Length: 334
Image (cartoon, rainbow, N blue to C red; front, side):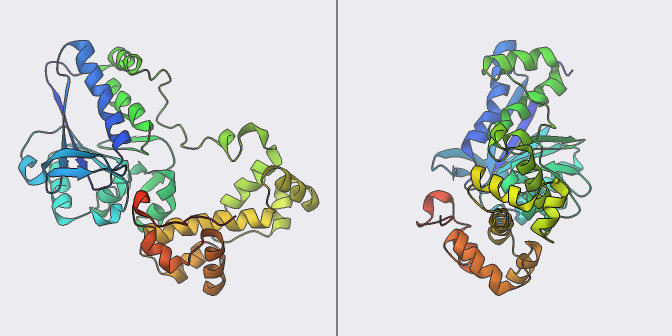
């Protein structure tokens, strides 16, 4: 427990960052200060050029310029990024992150901020988490980092959070680690966060996928087998053998609960993986086709357009545009 000093948190935001996740991270520190009657924590919002930074929901916040805060004291530097993180691993941001690493500052990230730290070479051999939508892309781009699908990761001087409401858990664990459980508990109560989750909590608990507890165990086990073999798909009979069920019965269960055949469901989750790679990486379409279990790029492109309504080459452009600026129709065709 640290006493007698204010811990400084510098939050670097990038254009189209997630405002709710960032504010959810800050608020427990505000509550801790209020409840203790002293400034246990201080924070600042920083962007590369300073001034107004627009969030993904269109709201705008005022930020300090990175160059003006380089020599300010900091105990934590947290990168909060969401859309198109590949655009923001700039020389200026990498420079400040390396500068802070040399000062033994704890470096962290929210949502897709891990892409920015990894591009700077600061996550090699470290555990980190990103929003589940970006996990596949992160694994492909940064194989030297150990990406997980937990809500938070604390790996020494590198900490991370998947985003969303999990940032409140993230902040509360920082408070607990620096000032003890009593203050963290009081802050959690004050912001009505009654269920502080363990950092290792999965982003998508198995019982919630795909339709909670209403889906039979055989279907969930079949889906798990599919998800474990996306690059080299298993034949449906092989999946049935693993699940110990007849193909006829599996077809019937998928039709009843998911309204798709096992083969179509399998194809769609492979295409969902492909879409992440198309919109979040610079991998070639041929590489993405192979990584998603398609032997032919032509077959891949046709299946992709059937599912999402546009070819992958076009989605690479449109899919990197923040959601509120996209043209419709988008996404999948029923």
